[in-house]
Image 1 (cartoon, rainbow, N blue to C red):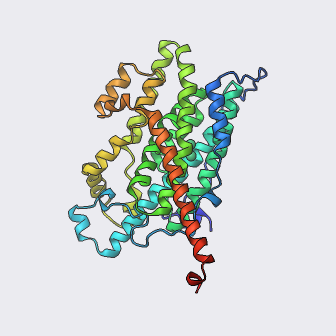
Image 2: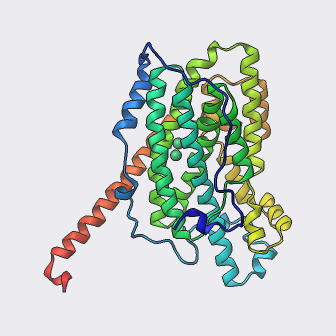
Amino acid sequence: MLIRDIYAVPNVDPSWHVPQTYDGIFDFNFDTSRETLMHLYQKGKDMQWDALKRIDWDLELDPENPMQMPLEANPIYGTPLWDKLSKQDRIDLLTHGQAWNISQFLQGEQGALICASKIVTQVPTMDAKFYAATQTMDEARHIEAYEKLQKKFGVAYPMTAPLQELINDALKDSRWDITYLAMQIVIEGLALAAFATIRDVAQNPLAQQVNAYVMQDEARHVMFGRLSLRDYYPHLSDAERDEREEFLVDACYHMRDRFQGPEIYERLGLPVKECVEYGEQSETIKMFRTFLFQRIVPVVKDIGLWGPRIQKAYTDMGVIGFADMDVDALHDQDDSIAKDFDARQAYVESVISEGKGDPVAAE
Ligand SMILES: [Fe+2]
Ligand SMILES: [Fe+2]
């Protein structure tokens, strides 16, 4: 089965072509002098994992609420429309809503794969090429994991227009740092918060595992963007930094305001406009949208794009309070939570194998 076979909407393009105009750069100095980047590269090599082996794919999703998410996470939960839905309609809405969510992760992972490989080609120094090469491999493994999870839903959605527009901007821009800004800072920063919601709120063990393990790598990817841009931006002129700030402000509003999933309601025959409006008014969705910026704002401040334009936008979005968040502590926590999942899995396996060796249990 291919993902193509389970798309919930008709006529999804089989491929997407993004024309490129940039130089592929060789580094004949073989410059690997930045210790922080080389340290991150070493971590990237040491912490590769195999989605086939690390995740227990015998685990299943729940037939009525696949990732066992709280009902409040659905944008129309608690509205008069929700009250009118039959039990089966609610199951369909939960299944399609969650499948749409995981589909955006899957589609975004392919975006990350292509962006990381663009960075390998285009970034001028060898240390950054080294790290981006490990990220490229990470993203391939993430696609593998989310693709397997997606198939358990039996339904998938194409990349939404806002995500596609931002990835397009990241890829077609000939300046290498714009790719970092769009992918490592905005998209991966948002993804970390979105993955964390499922890891911490979903009750389904398979959904928890996949997101916890992917997060362990994503935290490193955001760090890569942060280290690379923190070195680079002080060398730019004020006018050049202004352009980056403008790009960032647009990208943040774009991702916050346009992620509504109207195609889900259309597919299920629900009133699209009404459902989107319910989503806009939902207190849970508003809180989630604010939380999405928890990992982005402190990183933007750290890379030195902290002019009045950015600060005004983040104040307007109600996310400026995240500016002094300790992202390193969050990343350490992501790492230890993933290791806890490993420990729990190892414990379950040891109990099962002891059970098999026990003649009473075997009867
Ligand atoms: Fe990824
Ligand atoms: Fe990533």
